[in-house]
Image (tube, rainbow, N blue to C red; front, side, top):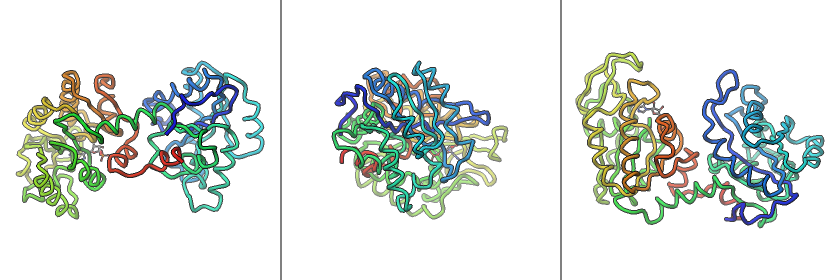
Length: 401
Ligand code: AMP
């Protein structure tokens, strides 16, 4: 796959798919700019090389309808400040008037198109206007750059179909896409051992494919968060009212069997902080994970689990972390996730390579202001998981042609 460094952008209009899918509060303020910040070097490189970027992104899931709360307009000021240039915002993505504006774009200026998901044709490949929508936006650039790793697992007009309208030598990836793939390849390729993966978060069902794939790669797998209780129940434990996926009990047992066959050591948390309700101010108890009393639910890993996990991480040379150890959004159940974050940071300081999978584990590391203390924090949750599962990402395939 070619990257932007192969292109001479001078005087060229460049259609750039970025990932500005950032969280906004009810007043339209950006509450976490990680994804936008990540794309800035790509946009700057295009501008500094004489290119004229036309930026497009999605925000949220407006389901093909114009919804003010999903407008990209609040992002214009941020971009002006970061890029130190004029940013023109265009609401109607496909009109002839917009095409005229694009043609008149001056050197040093940038256009930001409104949320591509305001159009049904963006996400639905079977929509009769899908190809037409892609062709209309493809007219805007001579070169197509995709830097939206976070949406690369979607076969949408702006991420995949549009690429086919460009000459092969003129479809390239931006810096974010390049870095994301290089970092994912580090753990998929020939990782330094011991390789330890940490999986957490709510459900096994979301991560089953990646766990299976990792069993062929890792030396040890740490399992925490809500998903751990399905494993305990599968082993005959009493888990009180902890999160459980009843239809995945057999699968959990099967995973444990497979791990044993493959000589992968599985670490489940020995203890939990259990609460009498799903509330930061609930009454809590430190409990053994196979004997959680009725009416109590495990919301964080306990002290012994923290120690066990940190011990495993101490010797790791490669670490991949996806998913929090508990309900880290509530301060009283964030300690386990923070302690694991600290252990990952310490291992990194001692020479380990650490990849933090996007989504909630990235949020946890950012909450600790420690993004620069680990090797790489991915901007893509679902996209990274699918890549690690071994799936082809349509956004990447489209660039390869
Ligand atoms: P995921 O998107 O699958 O990575 O899940 C992340 C979510 O899992 C976060 O919102 C956490 O609050 C939640 N979570 C983590 N541990 C638990 C738990 N023990 N019980 C319920 N939810 C949990």
